[in-house]
Length: 601
Image 1: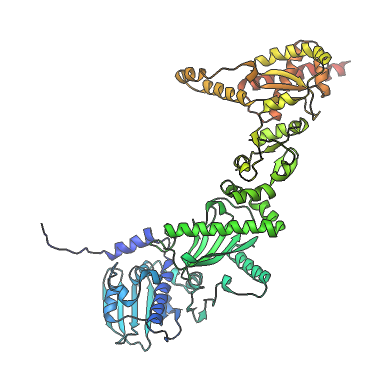
Image 2 (image 1 turned 90 degrees about the horizontal axis):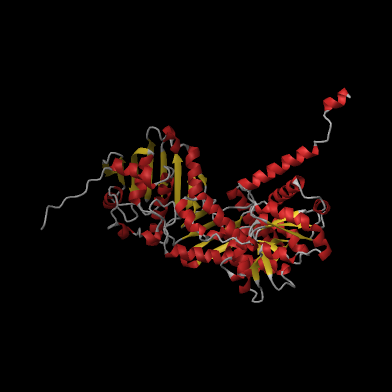
């Protein structure tokens, strides 16, 4: 079934509103779009006539707040004016002029429409290199346009904008200069604002130096200008498949994932100052400044389009950053050490999935251990088994005792540490790694002599009765440091049972019955309070006769051990700690005469 053909009617005001509120992040892009149109026209003229004059774009703020932008590009005929300047989205004729999307920065239609965000009228005077008279075109934001003859001695195009009410600040000389310099300073055509050239002949990474260190210093100065602080290092970057070249700056201070983006130029025109996903997530310590001729921009040309080529670039840049790190480990250990002090987190994130980086971490990255801070390769010398604890609090409570018991441990309480330790066998087949069970550690502590055990039996009987109410069992051992009177030890099995019990208390009756099936606590699985016989206070308390004071002393030691080991306190634990504290205070002052009685006497 056929019907009558109709054409869509385009509401230009609606299109401008769409551009300003949904496509472009800011009206500031009008300067970039004008520069893109001029640069593409120059590129097209070069392609048609290699002997054409050197390209130039002149930006001139005019009296009254207007702005004029002139280029000596290929220009337009009257027919091309109707095709390019009076059509939205039409591309059938565009390639005839030479403006193929992959070879040029932008396209006239949408780019020129962006100017309506700051102006109610756009005046264009253009003369084509193909010949013919100059043409004048004036477009209005309500959708009207006029075309007529004009006078223009030279080939090229001049665009004049007159600010609309409320947008005058966008066309001021200072704002235009700032925007034009930001967008166009790397273009390979001459761009001048108010008669002053703003383009540079070469990008900073393209400038050659006889001395590599002089080049490095110059690039670091450039990085300091962009980043606001001097970077630690600079890495040359190149991905030929994407026509990409540039540098990566290693930040001199810690950074976080997703914090800050990269500066990307497309065919030497600034695309974004905050581009994301250019490098792998683990390389968050690098800020890149690159120029590419092949990566695709999004519709607004303010970000990169996620496609296979961008994935290739991301992998390639990640490999170059990784190679730089490995090269440092071989040729410049001092710089590597300085880098690791700041950016160890990023390196560890890479080591979790990259064996070469795992070797670097093993050899160079300091880990906190009970023997001191040292690389894993140094720590494991002479050890048949590497033991670690998973939390910082557990390490703080066990490190000294583990070392005294001949069981050195690694603190794996920081990001990626556990994964790195578990992967060590990939770079050292003889490395055996296991999480330390605190219950195993308690079993390694020195027992008392038989005579001493008989001496402390009454004390242990009282301690057993007190701790039974706290789901804990007492042990008495000899260990260092002697300054620690008691140690609270929870084995993995005891921790599992404790988690089940806490869950039972927190859920309703139905789930409580289900979880109770897993609550199979035996004496062997309960936490242990290990008293240190080498501590003078423990020997004194152990000789004290059974009674309330001894019970309160056991409760106080229990609470102190929980606090020292950073263990969470249950309600019953807090009650025992408060009770013992107040009772011992009361006993301490029972026989002390009050100040009133002293004064009366």
